[in-house]
Length: 506
Image (cartoon, rainbow, N blue to C red):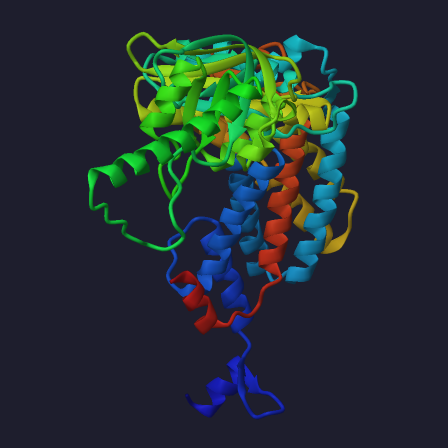
């Protein structure tokens, strides 16, 4: 490189190493382009894409909904950053201005929200329905929305709850039937079948959950036993029979009528001989219970896991009104345990569908609806949907920018303009002209119609609250906050270790 060019583009540091002045700007643009979704051309852009993935995950954990919106907003803000950087505005000024804008935005969103009570079932249903309307299974929202609301209300105390543990709501997927066959069960549902067909229904059930095997024990090391005559073989069989019978008698003595057996990877959890004895003693048996389901089962039934036969006592058992194996119209069977005497605050949702794709989509849709209700439990306020809060934010922030001076005003105005990407995207997805729709929406809000939004069903702009299109305040606030935080973190990066970054992307 000629010496004159080197002097223009960089300088030498104290150690004599050449430092490129343009490198920080190149890295910022590289990360911005990756965050905006443009094709990655180098390992330098890996960090920007990684941030977008993490952003979507953070939104999903916090609100459970708005994962697409948060990435779209972040992309629009990154686009605004690129234009501001090209005008020569320092990244620190942009970052601090964006923070002022988001603080003001949260204040504005809170001021236009409406408080909601958890006792207002209709409002909760409207929120869940709005979440389901954008899903593939939207035509079943009249079934899935009430199911989601009821599930959340059963696992919390509305008077004191500040959040919802969704692990207390178990979604059970069962292939067959249609989404119309989905149901909410106030109890426990197991997809495993009853082993002994002679006992498929037990009333006033005493339920035990064991983590040991009802089969002949094995040695710790691989050994072979050679039986040389029939007398020895008979003795082995008698010992095995006596051992299994003793175990089953102790289970029966404790009063157990329904036995759940955890899945074993070392040997058979249940031998044929044990099934025979349990069947004679009228004990319903369900085996292959997964380890990750143990906690939910114990909480639901009020039982305790039993690791050894000596611990099998009446105090370890749970009690339920009914345990039965239910036939599903030719598409398999389920085990339902209902009427638990000492239940934990848990419920089960059975999701049905004609194929795996439909079931997976229904499960995802129900999860999003549950998360929307959880948002209302965490922050009990609603705002209009349909792009109404974003366009109102854009107008109010533009007005706020006029009260600022210098570069801050310019950056806050750019932030406000970027928020119009949500109504613009909504209009485009609804088959409307995004430019004319957003312009009309902006004019309606300027005239004081704060709840005017894009009505996807009617293909125009209307009072979105009257259409019952609402969303939790927490979804919008978290999307705005997370998107801004991510953009600010990307802006502050001016150097990357390329070799390490390439290794991370492999």
